[in-house]
Length: 80
Image (cartoon, rainbow, N blue to C red):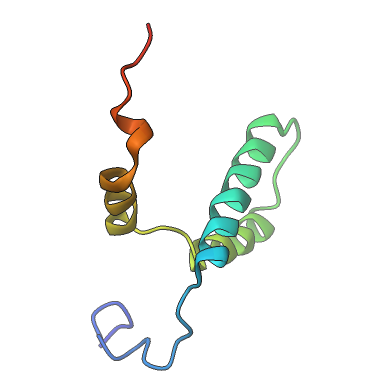
């Protein structure tokens, strides 16, 4: 049984705190900006490790949907 299919695989894992989740979003943006501005080659192993670190506390689809439902500014009319 793989970790993804085993519901007990994360038993004992530390729960992500709100500040860790917020920092993960900030770090993900920093990583994407850095990649978008990169002119040279990228160390794929380093990139993979940074991505895994960010994703550890990153929002899942359910959390994004919950935030979207609770966020008032998303209801504001858009200006074209």
